[in-house]
Length: 164
Image (cartoon, rainbow, N blue to C red; front, side, top):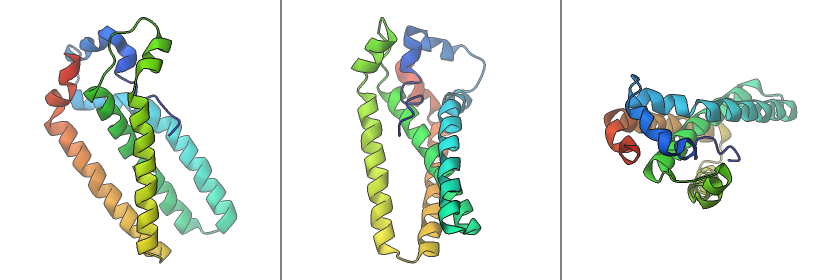
């Protein structure tokens, strides 16, 4: 949640964001490149959480499953954050400080994090068996990631429409 690189990926480019239109790389690929920094930073955090979990439980299978789930949640989160920034880019600013202070997109990231936490909590109360809970989460995350990726590929010009 504390990684703001994707939620301001377009906004921090200011009026230079229009250059993406002329780069000879598909917009869906540019999208994936813009979330890369956030993925790397959050993967490091996920790694440390998985190590801590393993040290507490000594269960390697569950730890690997949790690490995989954290990576999927991270991937979905970074995509959603960039989609939010593409929907509401803050392109007119004089200093980066102004851009961050006036950018309300960061608030959406906090709501997203709260929503994901709430969903995980509710699912954990429904499925009390941990292996079943982990399986349901993995299936849900894979389906969600696939749907978001498909949406990005099919609607790339619509998604990037605000920066043209």
